[in-house]
Length: 323
Image (cartoon, rainbow, N blue to C red):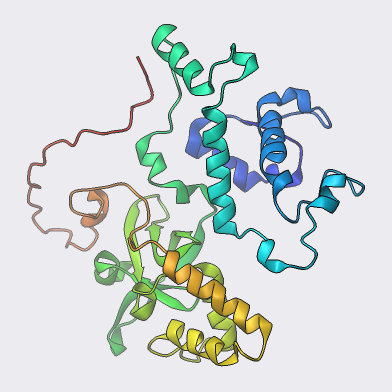
């Protein structure tokens, strides 16, 4: 993995997670030497010339760039492209690039060239394993959350993440984990559930948010806005449905302030476009809970019955070698 010497790319935690997850090494190239990274530099140049330079608000390559003046929306905010629209445009630009003939490839498309080398020259392609594709959240830095419980009040073991309780049947029955830290990985675009691991790396499974937070889709930004609206006091309750209360509060102020109208529009757009599947990408098991973790809730001397036989499932994604 070739990177430049920008400090954002050389963070030790990021490099360690990248190398361990993908299984690669990092090569930081020399300063001001784009020729050492020709493929990614050519990709950025293609995206800039075919997509970003044609969008409203393009800043150009320098202050006197003529394209900067031509792309000036002149205060019309409706001409700006949203993040969702930008993601669709980038996906379309990459697909169009792969299907367009190139002079450097003897007037064939990159997809045709790849097909030729794979089927004609027996070249091998490197694939990211399917279990890694399902656990992309593990590339981020884990958050440490301590298991808490109030057994005298009938509150079972759980963790608190951004003032919301998360738990699952295994954690709720594991009283011996009270006071111990868990490694929590979350998807900032959907906080309805997170993935938790013990300190030794054993997967505890998917922890679901409690209350309305488990049903209504929301991201980290919306959660933080709701917490800011209810104040910084942790002891203050958020109500039975804080997301609905936030929408109603912004709806009441939308006609008075522009910021409230903008926050309301962003929240409604996120709620309507959020995926309905609450379980984040992760390894698929027949029982829904990893086998090493299923024994946490059982007594040490309890008899463990053999799991029912499961027919193997044929994968649709290759194992990494293409013949």
